[in-house]
Length: 133
Image 1 (cartoon, rainbow, N blue to C red):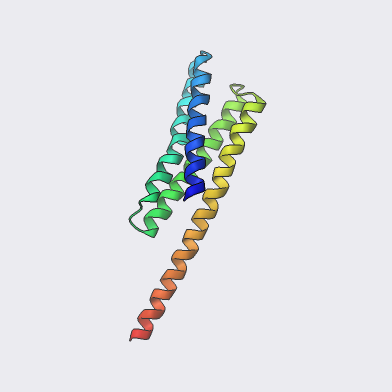
Image 2 (image 1 turned 180 degrees about the vertical axis):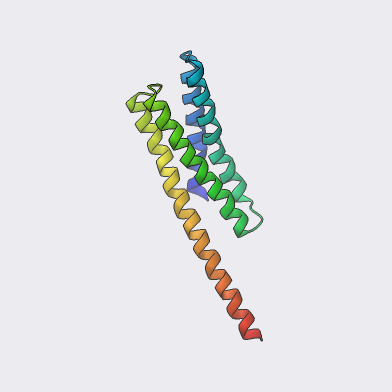
């Protein structure tokens, strides 16, 4: 879980700084609403990754990671919306978007691998039950 935990924590810090910076520019009500949304979804990524570290089972782990992935996808949407609405410059957008995209790629791989392992375990369990009969 090392790389995803690290990247999610760094993204959290970066997102908080971005939101603080944009709020200091005294943006309008519409912009503040979008900042609230990107803040919620963006910080939820690391929270769900942290919860997954102490999951009660593989299905619980998969669920938490899928939630983190959904939040990262929502964050991508809000970052793009902030850019389209001219609250982020192209450079700011590209930089933070790239970080979020890396997180999405890692989460997709984690979820895919965990699901494959869950299927393998289920097949092995079924085989053992058959042999024991």
